[in-house]
Image (cartoon, rainbow, N blue to C red):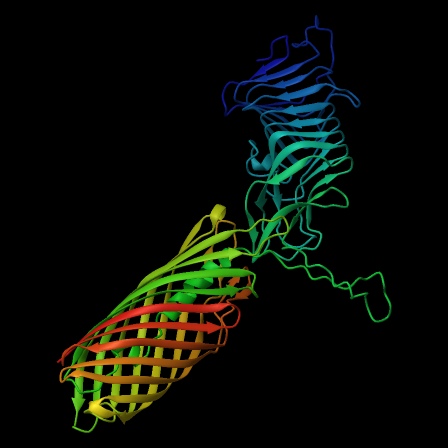
Length: 591
């Protein structure tokens, strides 16, 4: 319905009407059906203008949507007429032109190129060509793809409104939607980025999203966390031109003042200044889950069953372990803090001996739970993000131990075990959301040692046990596509850990049935491969040092011939700020 005052009403939201006739100034007393000056859109439906309309009055979008088709326009060049978009209403165009000013309290959409030959005041939402435009995609030139542009040939004022752009997240040359202001900017605007693809890349100047050719006094603030590949993208205003860019960079290092350029005397070079990327924090969460699942499978014979100075027909045992670890990833740019616990049970199922040597076979199982807090490096804008990970699950395994001395377990021993673990993993990455995935781990270990006993007075003794151990592990994890579209995989692989150590045990008899055994153990650990993960085909590793030092100390109390309890504290230290501190408590019953 079009009454004489120029009001177009489409009551039903599903209604759409295309007006191809030219709307121009006419005598209000004519039979044209409108007053020739103003256009008012009412109702929830959509009115589409498909002509070069030259009416000189205001355009009031009070309800629903008013849309300009390709090559359509309203107003005449140089006019100051107003397009007023009310709260809850929508206005926009596809390769169209507005001659006049726009005051937006609702939604202003643009697809391909929308040109405003006037000023724009935004207290609502400006949204680039995306699936959110309230029109069929077939009617849009470039729906959902970057390279859409809103050109304002006047001034732009942000009154707490927002701007949403589509951007392909890569290097400086990445396609993106853009706001181009040929006048001045002022006020405050929140900028949201929709990722339109891209695997992330390190930027230099950045991806330009707001170009200002006048005075750039307006402030654009990033409204959402933007990630691709390994990188965080943040919004920066360039100091030299006032334009706004998305950059994947941390604080730029200060150039070396002594670096005057190349040896050839290029004094203008000033030396190459590397730019460190701003890494996403959830790198450490994925790596932390992997490292904890692998680390909590590791154990030695003495960890499992303590010091054994006499033969037994069999035993059952329980062990509880808890600790914390600190490490880094991405060449020191991501900090990781782990807290973990483990409860393990086991028991012998087969024992054999001939009086000289013995063989014991048993079963074991454990439950693990570990949390990771991960913090990414600080961006040049001061931003720093955190993420968290959790892994919990079960290990089942079998062990076999051979002693050359069946009676006192002195001399040589060989211990071997196999474990299979299945784990539930989760990663929480702030605004990006959370992800769940499953993983498994297999581990096989072979350990050997030789215990030398030195007898002291009163039947006391000191034992020295040099040890060697090698462990193979295979870890497998599901691939994940997170809410930002990043594919996370590349965690599958094998690793080898070797250990050389020396254990010193004391044996202090309190009475014929009770023995106190303080002990200390020093180990050198070597791991063949770092834990790693891939974000959109870009690999990153945890900075676990290949070589680490470990020290254990504790006390074992043999309460009687059947019961013993062991308390132990252990610590690991290595380069790259790596450390691990844990405590464990063992209870063993023999018969």
